[in-house]
Image 1 (spheres, rainbow over the protein chains, first blue to last red):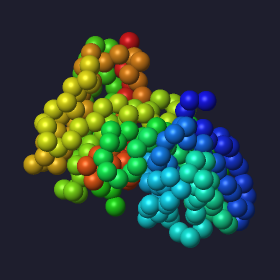
Image 2: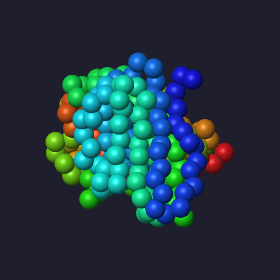
Image 3: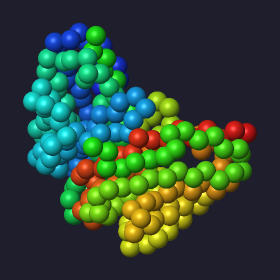
Image 4: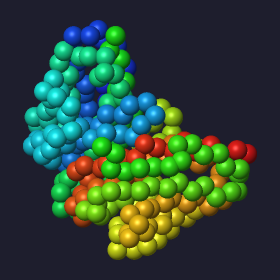
Amino acid sequence: GAGVSQSPRYKVTKRGQDVALRCDPISGHVSLYWYRQALGQGPEFLTYFNYEAQQDKSGLPNDRFSAERPEGSISTLTIQRTEQRDSAMYRCASSPRPGQGGGTGELFFGEGSRLTVL
Amino acid sequence: QQQVKQSPQSLIVQKGGISIINCAYENTAFDYFPWYQQFPGKGPALLIAIRPDVSEKKEGRFTISFNKSAKQFSLHIMDSQPGDSATYFCAASKGGGATNKLIFGTGTLLAVQP
């Protein structure tokens, strides 16, 4: 497809389980971002990559959260030992330009992965 | 820590009317201010953006007004249409328009009644 693709779209898991959320950015896009969006709130920055390098992970809530983008394309956000407070919509976005150095500033968001931790 | 405050939380406007959504920011280092539009079940999409070197930017029926001294910016939707019904998010970042860390407002749910 032409847009940012995320999978799974919906994930229900039990507390304590690990989950992996996948993001396939728009082809050729250099930068990839992970955001978390609680119901009724705006997206909250988690982390971002330029190519395969993780540039900023200051938004990751704690060390149970990690992300990788090993080949500079598909990215995986992993949450270990999930807790109920992790329940949210996790959104991936990509941009054709690196995250520093200017550009149009436009982020292209996917439709998200809704995580529910029971 | 909410660095971008958005109001109102929800807004109902009649078709043809003007929709106005306001945002205020705290960090004077912010230098890029986009508005994103989100329809139900979809991800946010860039609508219009402004940099602080101008006080107003207009694209079709959508206008951003920017007040640097007050650290405020607003979105005006002229001749509002039912198709404009969506959630609108203001955002801000620093670094010359870099997208490395957009700070979003809490969103405004706009309903345009026919």
